Image (tube, rainbow over all chains, first blue to last red; front, side):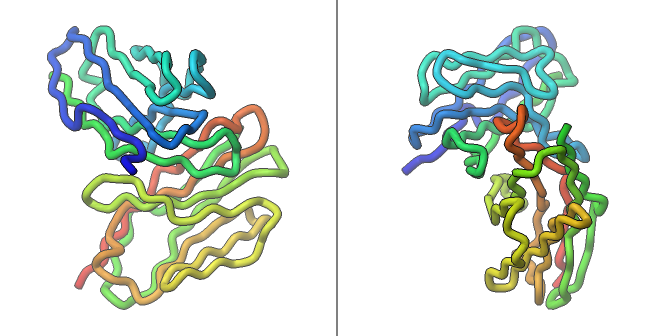
Length: 113
Length: 116
């Protein structure tokens, strides 16, 4: 049982380049999330989705876009990468109830030079 | 708005010492859930425990115990007889039942170093 799978694991971009991070979950979870983790800042929510075809902004959405065309996938896009987007990105999923913990992927380390 | 504060940024203890990680939360809802996650040096986030706002019983799991006190809005985590494998960053998180119920709000984490 794979759980939550993120690809790629590492990526280096130059300023202005674009890329897409892919998150896939096989637990039939309704909710999916993208967080970023920066030193001393904890995890901050970028965007989330409460179901197929829906997305919403989190705490730090600027510079990112997301899509959830299929229930099991949640894509995070950077249209024009900036050094401030250097971070570790975590995808997570949970069932559709607020008492459920989030299940996290192993993270993607992105460096923007 | 919900908020989680972990005032201890870093803690170092010698192996076999007990250590308590503090977590203070803020929420306007009366129904909410609190969580602890562990992030070892390998980087993954591991779910440790969930506690709902109606259950103030302390929880013990092996060397780990959690003390939930609504009166002080705290959900502290104690490791007894710490081991080197406990070295990690620990996150406390809050999920309420209101408008923000889709989200899990995290504290900034406490980095625990257990020295052999």
